[in-house]
Length: 219
Image (tube, rainbow, N blue to C red):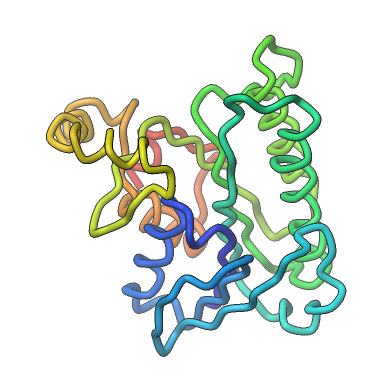
């Protein structure tokens, strides 16, 4: 399986990249990002790309892939709706539309979050925009598309949040998070489980297009 990965320097993306590099079924990984991951691996190739709304200059390098794991995402805290929509909806759809055109046999997996609003009409701004993003991704002519909606995510194996205060919380609460992952799979997963589930779903499929935390853990 040949994989394209967006968001490989973020917390979720770091974990997904680790599992891709470890998995024997993943032949190669192409990372698209604004900065390098700093990693070196025989499976790994990176393209530094600054305009996430325009892929015309690198389209020739984006064909022939089996799966895309889209792990780009931002918090809506302190952000107005227009800006959040651009960073969440516009950027995701620009990449997905390009990839659907170049790779009709591709499986596209998008990381959203628990509480995403599929009706697009709820009171929470982030949930409405995530819901519209999910809905419009599912309309694209991919072989299949899946929406991963994790709740809490515990970083493992050296994976770190780029936000210092968030990372500090993870360090302090690591024992509690481990307990929650074992006892409350509906509310907690790990970066390892997310990455492994993405690979398995891309390879084998899943009965529904939306996977909540408990589905991710079960897979």
